[in-house]
Image (cartoon, rainbow, N blue to C red; front, top):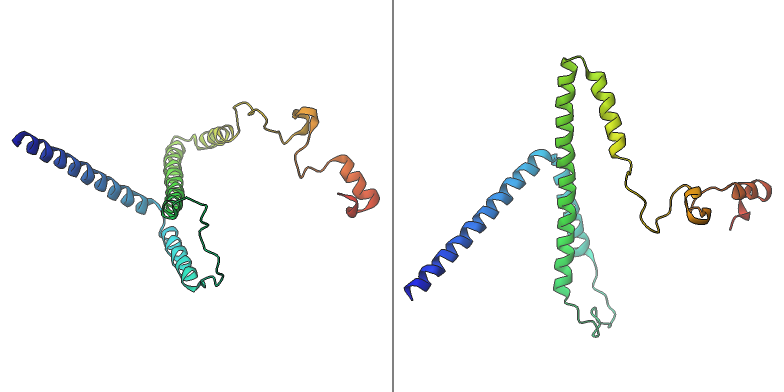
Length: 182
């Protein structure tokens, strides 16, 4: 009995340590985010949430006798709501992550640029960094199966994507007016 109690206390202590570590990690993560994310972004989030609350409070209750949840649906409404909330939190986290990541990249780039300016190679560094940026922002992987290209000559049967101005369409518009198109 004493061994089980000792094991239980050790397990409980381990869980508390893990929870404390998670809380400290979350707190430090929040501090870092608050440091890098400008205040107006967080204020925008607060204003947006307040506006949503005001809209929800002003929303009228439907007067129809139809139930809000259909009886044939077995989905749990609370789980759907929690999934929606977790999705919104993930979207907000990804936005913050995006801002932090690119802020750090910019700070590193700016630091190196200043260093190269001191070495009188600032123009070379700038040109090379622009070329690297262009290369990294173009797709170098092959096209996915079934994916169409913006250039119709690369597509099967030279099929063009929607919104492309073709010579035939332009000719019809000139000859018969803009109303002649579909």
